[in-house]
Length: 304
Length: 238
Image 1 (cartoon, each protein chain N blue to C red):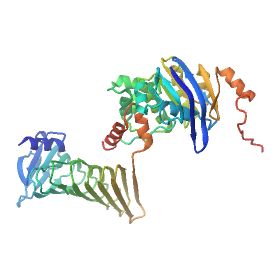
Image 2: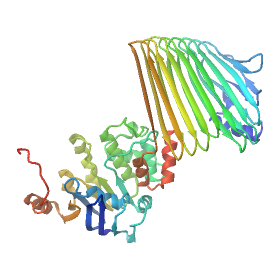
Image 3: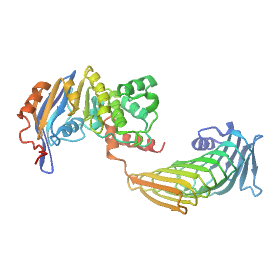
């Protein structure tokens, strides 16, 4: 593993992958290292384009890391990772992709992650996307599809703060009876970066619920789009909020869509886009911060 | 210690501060009072640097600070509690106190600042400064942030505004302790409890300082009608 590899892994994961119960490290389209445990098995797909992660029923406190790194300019890596989470299992999954592109061609990773949560399974899923290098474009298109059975719960956090030139992120979920999906997404774009995020959540089961929160900052000449579609087909609760700060020539478009197909569906959408409030800057300046320092504190806090 | 010389400030053709001259001394507790629209908050903002006067000079600690920015003045030891505290998504009470103190704080230290304003550190340190807090709580945190910063001059713009009377009763105790502090305290207030604490009351009307003196003296003049001539008072029977 090179120093660049190590740095990319550090950028996309606070925890060392090798300390996890099970891990699979993928570099430039190939498996670099893998570990499984008695409770968590990782099986490569026959075509080599992905893995199946099997978490046994009743597994408690399992930790899985599946980082992807790309250092080859001109490479397009498409991977299908499927997660089969057994009944009553409780696991933490870290995913993410780091791209280092010093060449002139585009480096791209499309990670399609499909989650199948059995009854009462609990998953904390954290993904982080990061890009570095000078010339070539860094493109990441993560897709997350989630099927949640009765009383299962998933907490998903998605973070992209640096270096990704273009991203089209799609998250789709179907929730059955009593299932809960919590999503927190944070994105910062600068230069001429583009980021598009789509959430489609279908609340199919009685008392299913979702809370999707997006906080984003678009600076310089960057552009972001946030699309959310929540459909309530029964007695359910859905809350989507998009909070965004724009700076310089940054642009953000939020497209909310909530669709109640049952009189007991309770769906809420909130969206707010604006520049940093003057009173926030003033307050921090009265504490001795310059305007630029105050801006940084406000944005760092907002995206924390 | 702080001196304002011939300060003038107009907006939209209206004179808001009219040749204000004022001298504030160390170890004194001043209360600025006067009718709404008399120029009190403008005066406080001009001292902090939030507004720039059209003319006049401000001397602080022997230095001309008229052209200094807000953060330069803050670094020199001027602190300011806003009438309406700003909300910050993602910034906690602890973060704000650390920014104010400009150093890492121990739990004991933060507890000290928060208990001074009647809040329990355990309950509040990790809370976001957002709409989840009540108006009274936000106001207390705002005051705590001024206490956490090393200041020579502390300015509080209407600390009672937006707080119910019951909460303000407790908050008044905070200001009572400030009367024993070093430095200068300048509070804009109409509250009798605060007025009673003042070493000197500064009465402003129509952008002019009408009187500086002790409470009894200033209040009796107000009630005699000597100081607020020309102020329209609403007649409920009319």
